[in-house]
Length: 198
Image (cartoon, rainbow, N blue to C red; front, side):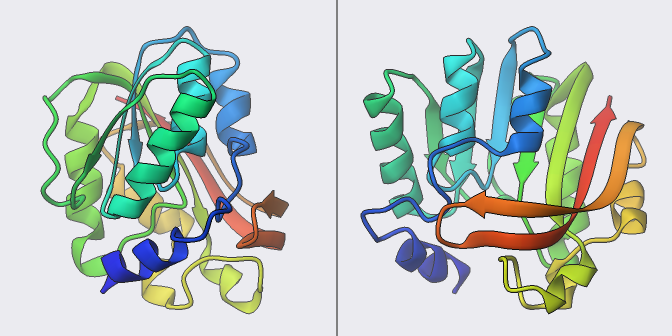
């Protein structure tokens, strides 16, 4: 069902969340030495393609074939190279201890599988690597600026701390921002931002 939803959302010519990278991610990347990065539930590729433009070796995955198609189009249009596979987050295969950075930008999963997915993603990180997450907080439910409409898919600081307890927390905050990311992320939003190191 989720795959059908995302295929439909990404089927328009326009990019649903724009082609400009997420601001929290951009600010972080702009101060890092490039390495190998994995983009989780990457959608139409705006973040992965930006990372490639900053000399990162980029891998990405999403459950939507339409998302991959648009991401590859964006990469070609911007003269970038990304590796992108269509896969379920519970089943996606990458070597352990492989990435310097794992990125989750609005990658929301139901509570029944969320912890398993998050632990799997941590296993892909090299020791010393970082995981960056920006996601909607449970208080986002009252806003029309985007995100899941099911509280089970939204996060709290406690959820993030528990799911990533094997990482050293470098940064964790709940904050209100104003989103301007394509047609579907517009307006005031309640988000969580997290950076953890392995």
